[in-house]
Image 1 (cartoon, rainbow, N blue to C red):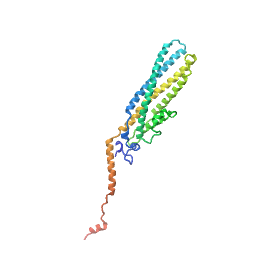
Image 2: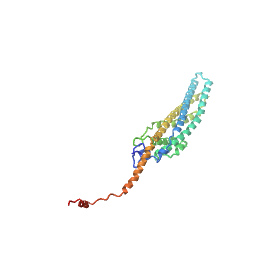
Image 3: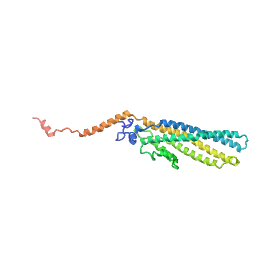
Image 4: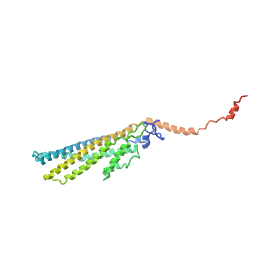
Length: 292
């Protein structure tokens, strides 16, 4: 007999459901809403973030090379070179802030939908409440690891099921790449900002210090690039895992199994209440068949 909830896997519990549906919320298959459309929007925005981060790395390398020529006294660098580099840097910085804000909004909306679905798949498998999928990003200190915990719990709750409905253990390596590189990019970027603060470009001794700050900034942009690419993979795999759980559902088979189970449950008490056939006493039967 197949599961009365999904109609795709064999019954594994007394409730008539497979192991996966038994730990899920009642009616999860109808309530689960795949986040495919939101995921596409996140892909595009994260891809643009990756491009901007790569451009920032290129600008930082360009700046470092120009300053290196000045420090070395080569004399082949003029203000036009710095003006060109500065124009590109302003263009990159002008795109970065609105793009980052748009990405944050769409990513959080996607994340909230994913958490809603994960709550349906494993209601008791989360360490933090659903509201933290929004609040965790804006709460000091907690923002360093709460989003990571939330993502890991959703990842595990959305894991594929085996033939009997037991959740598998998908690799979390991409999560281990995404989150440290993202946090690292924030920390390194903050360090670069502090280093640039006391630097005066017209003081010859400060130019080398400025080059070091630019190199640190380039490292932060490189980490942001890696984090953006890793985030695309995370969004893709998590969305696909939840979509696969929904696609596995066979509503016709589930309805048939449910009707058969209801019929069996109704028939069982009726069969138990039916009177047993009367037995003929052995003595009477012997007398009736005794020879003359």
